[in-house]
Image (cartoon, rainbow, N blue to C red; front, side, top):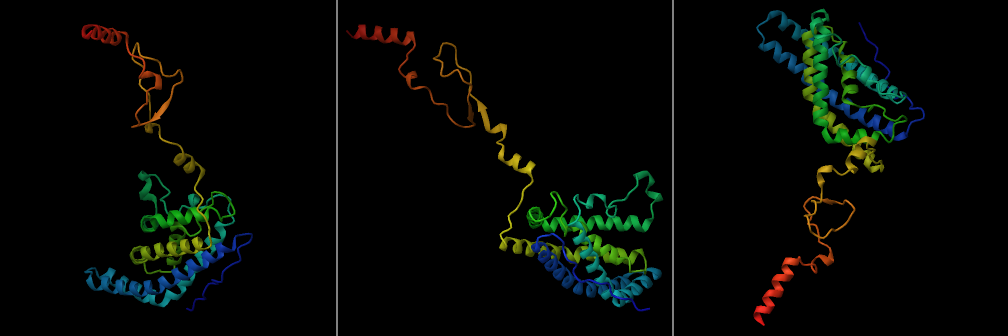
Length: 289
């Protein structure tokens, strides 16, 4: 049965910075190129797994998954592009981040009720969570800086990163629903997606970051982080020690001095000697006389 390819033409971004559209198209192009090699290696993975397993049913499933992946690779790739575009464009219209509402990466059931959750969904959600963690780990500083630059371009304050690890993972998982061989075959595809595309996704973040830097897009750091970095820690300062009884008072105002600095005595302190010192000096002068 022939399957029609989904429409992946970029949708217009209404009332959005044109640089966002350029970022979207750059990311989509790089991810699409990565998928071309991914499917070829996935077919090899299925073949190797089928060749090594002693389970006859699992062997048949892997061979079937290899054939199905070969036949549907173009359709799955197009479906991924469509999902990514739809998610990207939709995220720009939301006043609040959507990722927190998505149940796709978390098992929505208490631990004691996990047996009631469909095994397929549970296993796929665990794989999705691992993919997101891997993408965030490899993205590292590039991902953080990209999110900060997007913060200055997104139409709403606090909007979600439209090409976040969650968004990319979600787009692929939805496309993988086309693989009907079985759960084991889909889990292999998800694990391969994690291993094969972690570095490529990090490369996407790097190139999009460099594009925004070339466009002089500055990073926008959240206000609570700016306040934290601009406020000096209390441990950097120590109060001056109390004056010893009988010493000349320096000031009536409490002063905080940076830790490690040496308090300087007043100028007249060197001229003021204790009474005992004056008497000792006078007695010594008389003896000499």
